[in-house]
Length: 275
Image 1 (cartoon, rainbow, N blue to C red):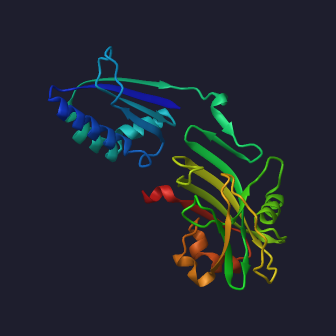
Image 2: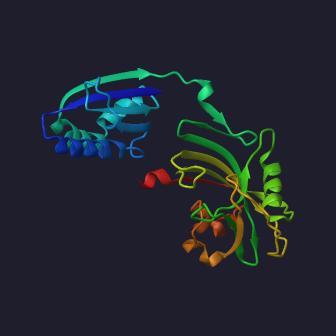
Image 3: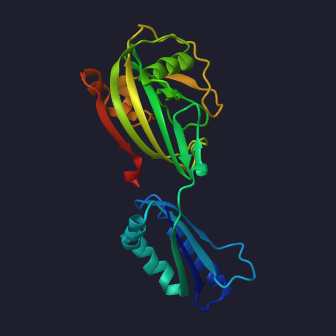
């Protein structure tokens, strides 16, 4: 990782104008997060300055690599902010860039699940179940989630994906389902908004299994999500999926294709590209 830190002093201007300029610089630079590849974190400090300070505001940013920092410096969105909101109002600029070795102590592991987090970067290995009964897809949600998602969950250490989905389906539906076949391998990238993931850059590798029909929608769900919220089950008619609030998006549009396919389908669901 690379740290990129800048301290600016502002040109002479009334204090009220300084406050406005600092707010504009902060909004402009922090608004670059999610728009520039390799930019991990970016914050502009404008408050809490001690009397011993010689600068007016500070940029504190983190990048994946030196190459990412160089690309950031030339990126049109960054150039626009620097040209329009920073340089016209700053008198001096002091910069320091340095490499930060990764400390293994900074890695948080979600044992027993196969997941880990470094700073705001979150990775998870998950399975999902595609369960269809009477022309409806089984989905699940909870009070903290703004959308439905598939039955399933994190693969445990030393557990196969098949073992995981059998376990998760039983835990979340209260009934036993058998696997038909592996249907989808999904690389899922998104920014977390659920309280459990809020503000995280999420990278989830998901194996979706088509489950054999039991011929009944009767379930016995007593499931709680990993954030402790009580989960609720819903059956969504297949013809209503395109307009349903369900994620990942391929569940809205590609179920007919998935049901016909004889081999697993590879899906990349990248919500970052929509920003």
